[in-house]
Length: 282
Image (cartoon, rainbow, N blue to C red; front, side):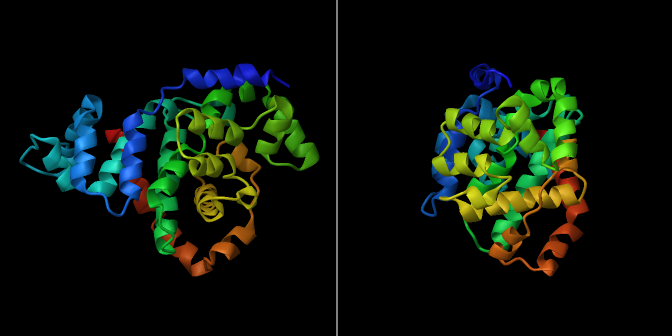
């Protein structure tokens, strides 16, 4: 077992999410907010402004005329897409590198995180749950702990894998026993250090075991289900996806039918193409 304190200190090695991202999420979740408020906050962050203008003027949107102001770009893109793009740009650098310990190549964790975030939001909208920006962000960030634990997992892989086989436990459970902390716990600590809400922290900490979530049970279950769907479709699992626990009761609690899930999976390829486009712009 490793020195947990030294592992936690490595949170500081991550590129932190700018404070503007938290403010943007708050505005997006407020039904009384407006594009004017969103524009006002973004205008004061030169990096976010420059990135949004670059994206809005990209070939992806197929406009011949170019946007000269951030206000024009935000009105054209709409609040939801603006929030998505700001969050994607904020976290991209952390999630893009290769994660050898988890068997993920360069960009794999990044694409998987974006895909699961899009699916989580679709699931939330399907059930009119609300808090879609909270759910999208939690799904996007849920595996941030892997970035820190990657090397520890790589060094201890044989021991972790042997424990999975002998004890019939999940990769995450073996990770916890061998290293002393798992990526979900650590991910919650990252969210806390970045000043995200207690709800966000709890969703990330419990995204593998939603039944343990108290204040955000429904939101946590949605993020877990999105994660499961990605695993079932063979995207982003890596080595730990080979030892994953499925909680059928989560689907029952959310009252999703087999038809609901089949419809989401039927458009999986289309979502994957959309993710490729979003990732290339981030």
